[in-house]
Image (tube, rainbow, N blue to C red; front, side):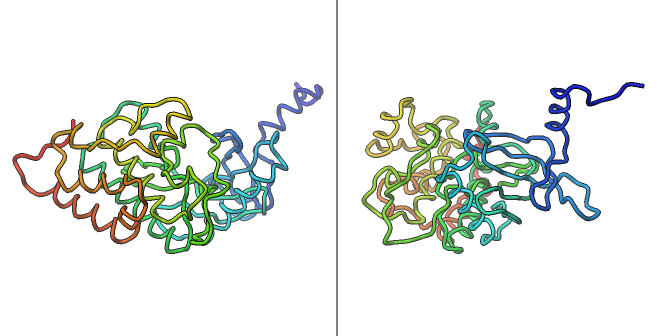
Length: 303
């Protein structure tokens, strides 16, 4: 008979792999993923008869424990996620201040993973996806929050096409008296989706900031390319601040004029020229969906 645990190093490995680590009333299992500063684990209630690993627990990476900014983001995520109720935004169902947040596990792939394969979205699917996200953002704004980090990495797409916004760590309260004085991006890729006003410190951030980010995503879904091709941080910031976005119709000729105009409005440098990211934007996207579904011999989906 073989015994286990005689080696301290082996015992440490067993403990690391064991799904018995407890965070409050949550049992933590295998790791689902990680970012620069956070890790996400499978989780399930540690008490009761429920056995499914259908939850996700997000916590700060050990090497960054105690970092004030990261703790603040986790606190904001807990606050926003507990106040927003929508099928297109992942809720936070439990948290310990500055330590962890627990959410229902969202199944599927991130939009970033799908786009990385080079897959082109049919026009109807592209607009449908954007409309779902706009519906989610409507609820975010009605709850008096701005998402602040709408990008493909933070969008989950299920096998049925259901779109869900995740990661509310950059969410901020809507405050018309507060300029964007401390918004710094942790990852260069995020810069591609930040609106111009989030790259300055002089004006308050409005819900239309999320409209711009969603417009960048919709541009990518339609054209299969990034809005701006620059690679360095300085070049991307300069393009976001001053370079005009190309019309999607110039890149995909079969895009209807209504969609071309809507994307251009969403990508306006002036936030007040963008459609309100609430019922106005949802209605505009729904109208384009209907137009794309209407019989028209001149209309073709992107292959």
